[in-house]
Image (tube, rainbow, N blue to C red):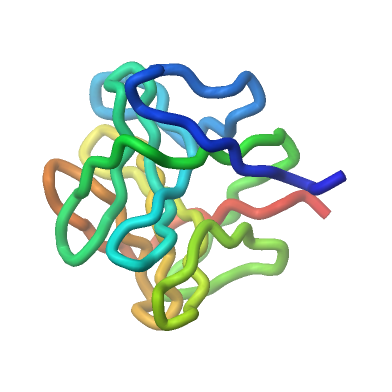
Length: 147
């Protein structure tokens, strides 16, 4: 059996599986779950907010709302502090650019939220979708699978 799996879902349903990974909370306290979506030729880690019936990806300087996405499921994960593009052992690959670079799942504290985003190693940054923009952070946490 795989250590984790992705479940296709749609925003209009407003629910996630019981084994979905909660990555944080929005500024209004709404739970944020770990997801990914295909956009602009890339598979991009996403923040999924079921109560708002949407997921968001950081892409090309913007926060992009998506209606179809996948949610990460299983409960054998930890968050490990990192910075400047560091990717620890057992980091979870959440996506891939059209150029073939792996994107990892990260999260940061930002303006009252604890928000999920993508770690882009070649940029040495974790980008989050927030308030219509793609916001970069050099200090972040990385989702890692417990060995």
